[in-house]
Length: 557
Image (cartoon, rainbow, N blue to C red):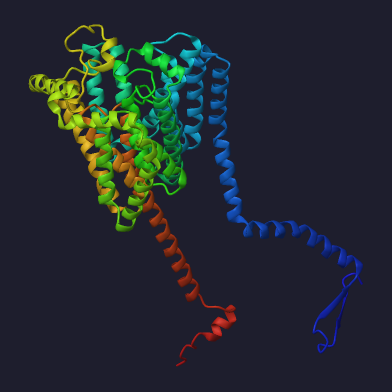
């Protein structure tokens, strides 16, 4: 009786339904089976319906988790500065920066690079706050080690991806590293280990940053999103502070300028101080501002226009003619590389930026000094820096023809101060990167270094030309070309300027490799779908018996 079901067929003229009555035991068993399968069906249906939304929520949650460490680090730093604990900041800031950089390096290559860029933007200002609240100027502050230490973490890539150095895509970087190591070994003999090692860091870490972008090309969409926001918002912050600093220098900036002895930066008075914003001097800030300004042209939002509108007066306030020339080269490159529609958008963006910054350009204190500075380009006989650079070219051009091995790292710039023979005539300061490279690296190192840089530039040009639609990569290449053009005036391929250069030339390479990978995967999926469809079409349907009936009968003799 328990397995008996009674079927009652209603009149189909009414509703056409067939009802089945079952015993209580059968009804209970089917109800239990339905209850057991309901959660699975309910989970599958919403999952299938809301899969894109679930992925989007998961991605947003992941990004928020990545911001916990940088936000916490920033909050602790601000709290210590508000409490006037400059001594603690001097030790906690570099240590905290190293820890946060290590965490981001493991979790997200793009966020790691963004954090390193923010450190380069803001670390000198943190150092000024700490010195001001301590009441004593520190010639050698541990705070300034934070960005270099964070950037040095990507040197781990040389160990984990050592074989990539021998591949064709990394050959330019390998040549530059070999040239730098050559100069380092020569410098250890002439300048000492301390001086050579100090300069080696500023020469080598930009190359490590470029290698980091090269091997993490699969994260190019993250680089596009995160770095573009970094350059837009970072450029807005440092440009706004630079304009404020020029109009009304804060007390901590005045304290730093007074004790640093940098006469070339002007005096800490309104409209009398060259804009350095949150950075050490006007030169590095001008290069950073130029790079951010060119990268904002790849963005399409109101914040980018506002950042550009503040960047122009801040850049003029640096009184840096070489950077203005590099900016002009970058803009020309963008106009030639982009298509007609993108050129119109670029022209509209530049026009909007000019309109936004026009009120600042109407201030006489800004325009008069900038015009007088730019006018010296046509009055070279009255330009002291030009006369000094001409003497350097005359003196060291003859020396380079005789000094084939080179002087080595540590014999120029700040590294010469750590040399055991700092009073030597070989300890010099160069106002020309084109002269410093052969003077330091000699003929062997210069050939390797120049070959690597040339290959990087040519590859970036060809790649960006083939993918003009990627405005982000094209803008990075334009900025890199502008930085390279400034080698006539100073060595822009080391330190922060070098970091921007290697990022700029590596972005189009990473973008192209990612695009090719996505195209290959799409082609494979399409091929697999076609193969599956063909296999399904060629597979006979029906039972084996039906298939045998459908087959033609063999001829019986």
